Amino acid sequence: MRFIDLSQPLYHGAPNCPAHPSPEAQVTRDHPDCGWRVEQINMVNHTGSHLDAPLHKIAGGKSISDFPLEAFAGPARIADLRPLEPNAPISAADLERTIPDLAENEIALLCTGWGDIRSRTDKWLYDSPYLAADGAQWLVDRGARAVGIDHYSIGGSRDPMNSETHTILLGNGLWVVEELKFPPEALVLPPPVKFMALPINFTGLTGSFCRPVLLI
Image 1 (tube, rainbow, N blue to C red):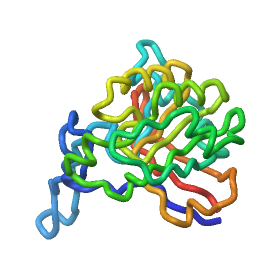
Image 2 (cartoon, helix red, strand yellow):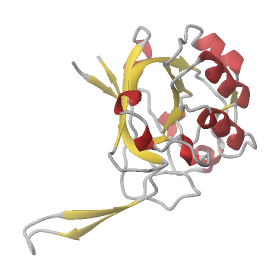
Image 3 (tube, rainbow, N blue to C red):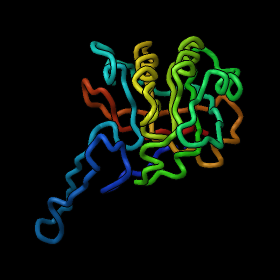
Image 4 (tube, rainbow, N blue to C red):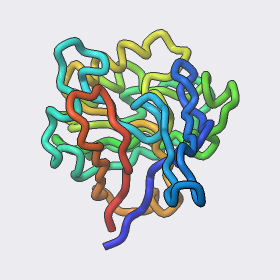
């Protein structure tokens, strides 16, 4: 078995949602003074490659720890939507075209290409493509288990439907994985692929850091 890593690296000052504080990593103890090196990490749990649970948007919804661990691993289909222009909506028609065989309980992974240009620029921070409300509803109607995208927000950052997209997905019990990166080898695998994004074991969180991978 081997893994294809779909995660984005985290580091001090890494690009992230501008509504959140920039991630920080500070060495608090170090060699040779005390014989150990220790870092303190400060960041919102929706930073880098991470999962969104329904509770993130839906009052009384499931937290990450309310899902069985097995829910975060399963068959997935990659929708290769490249190239996408800034602020382009991903519609139900786009999903029907790229992942027409998506089956019930499968995970949809949306490749926009914007994971390759991750940077602290206005373009990446504010003008990403996003899943439109009708695309979110298409996933719900298909019985998808979850959906992922290669940007920090599946609903985009400028579009007024951001809230509606999250409400449709999370309100229907799907979880979302954001900030993916698709290497070329991931996009030529025959579908469905085996996907896994395990959260940290922290009770009650609305979201969690994760390491998303494809299993070969």
